[in-house]
View 1 (tube, rainbow, N blue to C red):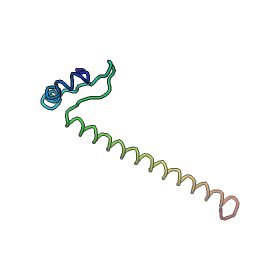
View 2: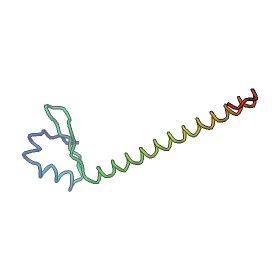
View 3: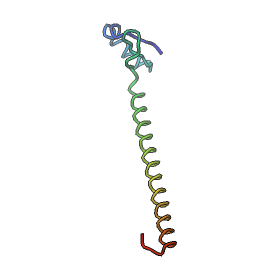
View 4: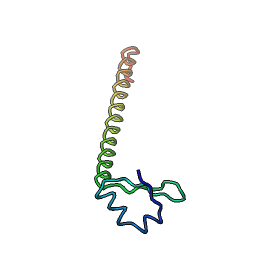
Length: 89
């Protein structure tokens, strides 16, 4: 993956944007030799956003499933306690 400094990016912005948009390249932007950002094709950004949304849905589904499982276990335990003690709670 090509790297470009902030100064080089400023001086040749159109070139680097062209590499991302036309050639589909991802470009790492560096400052003092350390990566700080990236210029990526817009299609890659959209794909990343779709992946993040899908992962969020999967996480939410997992949390809801876990909560449902816990509620069922708690209800079963309460029913067992009620039967064993002959009380309501």
